[in-house]
Amino acid sequence: MASHSTATDWQSKILKKEYQNWLAVGHALSLMCDGVRPYIEREMKAFHQALLANLATVPPCTCPRPPKHGCAWAAQLTRCHIGGKPNSPKWHQSDSSKWTDPNQGYWEVAKLFMSDLGPSKAAVVDASTTDCTGLTNLLFWCCHFRVQVNLVDAVREMRNTKWGHAARQELADGEKADAFTAIRNLLQDRELVADNDTKAALAEIDLMEKDFDARSIERKVLADFQVTVYGQLDGIEGEMKDFKRNCRSVSNKVQKKLSGIESRQTKVLKLLQSIDDRMEEERIRNISCATQVSNLAGWAFRRTKQFLVGNLRSLNTKSLAVWMVIMILMGCFRCLSHNSYNDGCPLEGGSVPFDTKEFNFTSYLNAARESFTGRILALQ
Image 1 (cartoon, one colour):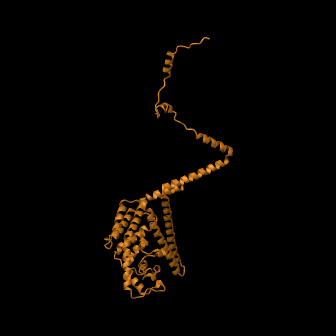
Image 2: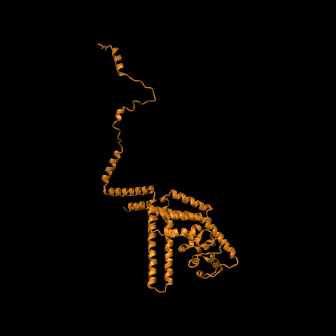
């Protein structure tokens, strides 16, 4: 009953237009990120090389307390961040000892322009390991990139407020259309329009929109959304820690603020649980038919075996021997078709490998009678 209910829930969800809209926007965002990643990777390496050249005469950062940077490197990076306070560089998630590293330094610098990465910051090492939020924030906050800020902000706003916070994972047709417009506008920016990777991304988005298959993309979109929700949760937990650390006394106002943050945390946890449940449903649905038949056959074999063993143990040796003899004797008989005699003898139409001659007894007896003259008895 539970499996039937799960299948029914899944069917009703996947066929709902608003859920399909949400999936389509999520997949379009993923394709967009795939298109801009090579561009961002190249530009960050170029930006890092420029930093190394401009700061070649100054020593590397050795600030003992990263949040309180005062070195030349920090001053230069602050000037490259267009946000200012409170959106200043995220010093806590970047390893300043690697800023001058020719191989790893470029992405440690990139992390300064992203929103809080949480515990995953060590795993973010290049564009391919950075999610959509990190990439769009980098494009938005770093002055090195020449993409129009308003186009980047439109995508950020849509992803963060509409798609990323859709509690039921549903978008109206109008919201979907606005999202696709924002994504296309960004990919067609004058800085990106001639890039081959962004051209390919645009083509894939157009193709996906014309021939949309919700089932084929659901798992990937849910996985991307799961990362987004984890990021929201990390941000809320960080906000709670900062709030508790900065508040020395717990007044009614402070308590109300803390309760609001905890309420947001509870909602995000429920959202995360719903995504986990949905992904589990999708995993069960993707089990192949052959696997299900194999599992069913294995279960039937085990049950049959248990039944036979249980019944055989209840029979005595004599009864078991009698039944085995009967089964063997029954196997020695074969039932022929009841109509087989209508075809005549099966050898009548056969052939033999030597010459044969038909012998007529009637003709032979008649000839013998004509030549018979009787017996002559000898008289003694």
